[in-house]
Structure formats: structure tokens, C-alpha cells
Amino acid sequence: MTQDQLLGLDESHLILVGRGPHRLTAATAAAFNDMQVAAAHQGHNLQAASSWRGFERQLAIWNGKWRGERPLLDAHNQPLDALQLTETERLHAILRWSALPGTSRHHWGTDLDIYDPDCLPTGTRLALEPWEYEEGGWFRDLSAWLGDHMNDFGFFLPFAKPLGGSGVAVEPWHISFALESADQQLDPEALALCLQQADIEGKACVLAHLDEILARYVTASHTERRIR
Image (cartoon, rainbow, N blue to C red; front, side, top):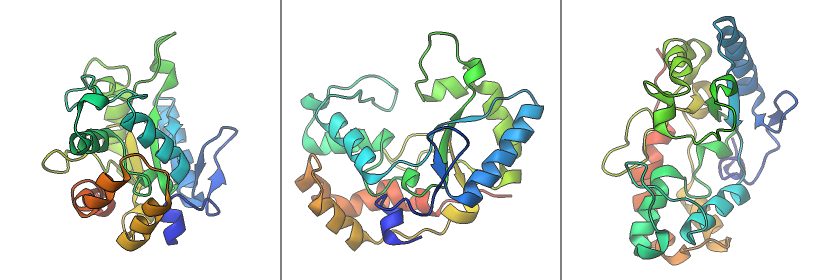
């Protein structure tokens, strides 16, 4: 992938998936389709809740959380008041659940957030929180099936465990196609230039902590690979 594709600035390498709005690389889309068919044979309606997100979309998420306009959660899924936090505290609180624009794996077209819409109770909104995929949650059976079979189709969970310290939270809904995602190398200088030119909230704080952000929240997930 080019640096613009890794940064979420270029979507020319992607294709539409089915009739919906989701976009993936051709190889990721083919592998995901095969996995959907296999899941359906076992009674699971495996669907994407989110796939490719560009830089501007990730920027909107970031800015909304920074300004307190979007929900912000702590490590225990409890609400935080963004405006009561220092800028550094706010930065780390956002990064626990949401990537810095330019660093999201969703920029690549190799990663998806998945769920089973048939298991979501009528009138209930998808939250994408860990409890939904754990014992007693809506998607526990789907999560268990993926744990047993997703490697067979080339997928893994990049956020299956905390990335050390107060890094990225566990995300049992986020799957990645290893054959195209495992070896991606983001250029820190290209990222810094992109952020300098962006209308991003907390820019000075972000740039001052960029090396730490990359080491703590990005590098581990960008090199993780769990294929048997």
C-alpha cells in the first residue's frame, strides 16, 4: 500500500462489498465472503458493522470526542467528561477506544468490525462494547465461532488483548486480514505532516506526544499477527 492509502487519504485500492456501503481490498472482500458463507452454514449471519474509514471520517470521530460531543469511555466502559480532563488525559482516553486519524487500521481496507444482526434484539442499537461478545452477550456464539475458524480464512483479532500499559482496549469485534495487513509500515514523518495540515482538535498535544502515541497505540497492533 502507498502511504496515502495507509493514512486513509486514498481509496483507489478498494472495492464495494455487496450492495452495502462497505469497502475493502479485493482480497479481503473475497476472504470475508468465504467466511460469511461458512458462518451461515453454522447459523451465524456474519456482517460488517464498519469497514474502510477515511482520514476525514476518523478526524470527525476524534474531534467529536475531544470536544465532548461524542461519548468517551474509561477502561471499564464508564462515561467520562472529556472537558473535565487535561489535554493529555483526554488524548489517552480517546486513544483507548478510537485511533488517531491517519493511524487507524480501518484506513487500509483490510479490517472490519463485525456482528450478527439477527442476534441484536429489536430496538437495540449496536454498541460495539466487549460485553456484547462475552458470555451472556448478543454475539457470544458468533465470537466463539470466529475464535475457532477465522484463522482458516486468514483473519485475526489485532486487539485481542491490551497492548500494554493503558494502550488500546480489547476489541473482540475487530478482525483483520493478515495477508495484507500484517506488514504495513506507516511513515511517522508522513503522518506528522498530515496531522500538521489537518484541522484536528488538540493538535499541539497530539504532535508533542506523537512518538509515544505510535509506540503505545499503533506499532504493536500494526505488526501483530496470530495466524496458525
